[in-house]
Length: 325
Image 1 (cartoon, rainbow, N blue to C red):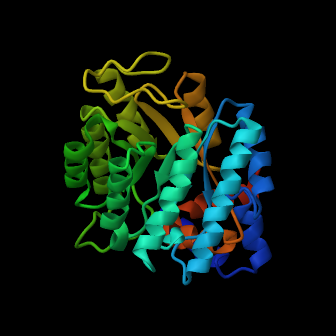
Image 2: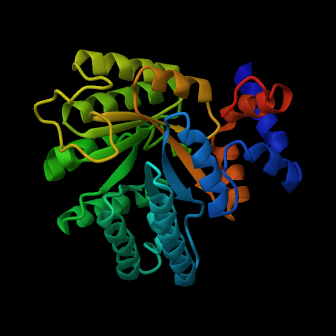
């Protein structure tokens, strides 16, 4: 019943005027400009949050667009340094031209990663749909081969292949592997992914266990209580927790602005009370801050690909005081 209501709300929202979608999305998107993201980070820094900044946009049609994203991310790096934010970068390899001109796309990515490396800043390669899973993982591996170990990847629990990907990456990088694990926003075909809620949650939890056992750094990107509760139990089982040294014998190197082997990551505007509760218990919590001119396209995509967000849209509209970001 709830799922049906949520899908109905989403179906109505995506047909509404652009200004209405903008009103809804202002909770989940910092704004269209870098200054908007800076303001949000200043506000949330007071709560002890750290950040991942994402300039919205992905698959592009020209290398001129790739140049724009490279230059914009350089501005982001400068803003992080100037404001002394505790922040990572999150980039989509396709936005840097990977599918248009692989050599130039790799050059663009390396350019940014080297700049971030010079400031001891971490770069997360966001994962798009299954067409670029292999390419995205390969980008990370090639950066590590160049000595740029300040790069990690996102893996999606819903894909059948993900446990194998974890094993393969572990063989190549060992405990230097650094992941963000999420259920996955892209609605992939049933031939290659789980499509029902419980199997997706179960598969995601298995991936979390495999990453922790490999000594990897794990960013748990979920708002789902079953995933978070499983993670808390898994951490306790391995004697891991906040305000302590990572006890795993095979743990990777300590990194600046990282937790003791793990952290929780959440989207801007989603379940702020849960994030603050985890932070109050000492867990490192990272907020994903998207901004950019493509806010409308991003908002519509998230609504279409995750119709369960409809209940949050309705709640924000009817009871805006109940769940501040």
